[in-house]
Image (tube, rainbow, N blue to C red; front, side, top):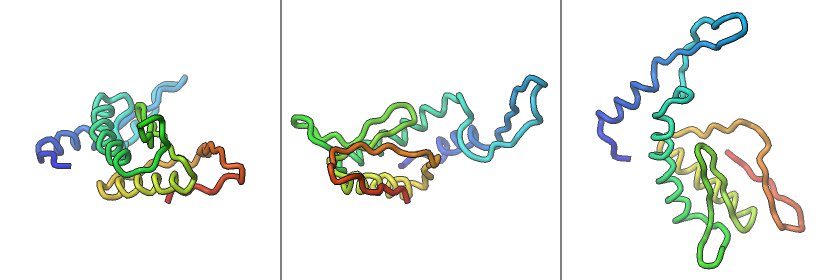
Length: 134
């Protein structure tokens, strides 16, 4: 995305070598190494999310098929670290998911798919099609 080496090194230094422990009724656990992600509650979390999310949302809105509301094409909604893709058909929704995955792959970002059931709401009277996160 064109950030300087100094900025990248600063962000990286905040995200590597972190340890944590868990507070229990019996005291704190031994320290545990954190090998991925941003520490919970870190102020860098929201900054990194906005740096990544804004271009992603712009990219989606420029390329994705959403649904029409008056003169606007709405293809995504986002808040904090959640994103909702919107579309007028199940096939177009799958295309939008594929676009997000393409963007993430290009920038080397892994989607943290947690495996919980995802909701798909449709007015399709023929039933829902399967939606895939590949």
